[in-house]
Length: 169
Ligand SMILES: CC(C)(COP(=O)(O)OP(=O)(O)OC[C@H]1O[C@@H](n2cnc3c(N)ncnc32)[C@H](O)[C@@H]1OP(=O)(O)O)[C@@H](O)C(=O)NCCC(=O)NCCS
Image 1 (cartoon, rainbow, N blue to C red):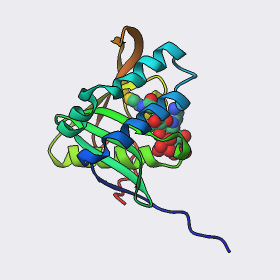
Image 2: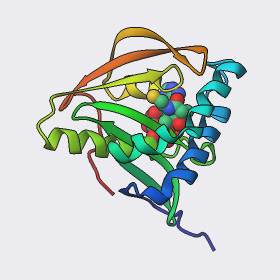
Image 3: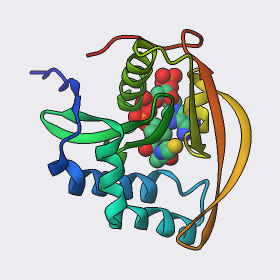
């Protein structure tokens, strides 16, 4: 008999989530960004989760965790009032709307606080995802991460424009 697929849910970040979110971060970079970044770049990017700063940033930002049957499968964070700092989804569940749910929620929370424009420094892998949601490329950046140069693109969305499902599940 066919079983209903488990529904993803969202909850706030807890300090105890750091190890599993670090593992999701590394797995998503390793398996999802290979068309856009070379191995040395991916390695340097993944190593960012090994520093204490990783957990500190998640705790300091407004971080949401997406779960499937209670287990974390993705996360996103809002830095300050208007900047999406992190968005990572485990490769085993990519393409199932998890990032959409996370970013819908961050946009709603930011909008509810009076933020008019949200920005993100989107990886080349995520640029298409954000463009689809109405984020517009503003500027190309080159950043150094653990001695490797990585490119990303600052994108901006005026809240209330562009597609968003709007449903918090
Ligand atoms: C980018 C990322 C977060 C997307 O997560 P996801 O849960 O697979 O995304 P969703 O399933 O919510 O995708 C929603 C829509 O965006 C599209 N989309 C997702 N990734 C995309 C991409 N790389 N390029 C273009 N479109 C993309 C999907 O096809 C889907 O479109 P649809 O609604 O028409 O089917 C995920 O691929 C990831 O973790 N990447 C590696 C880490 C990374 O680069 N993070 C961003 C740092 S800024």
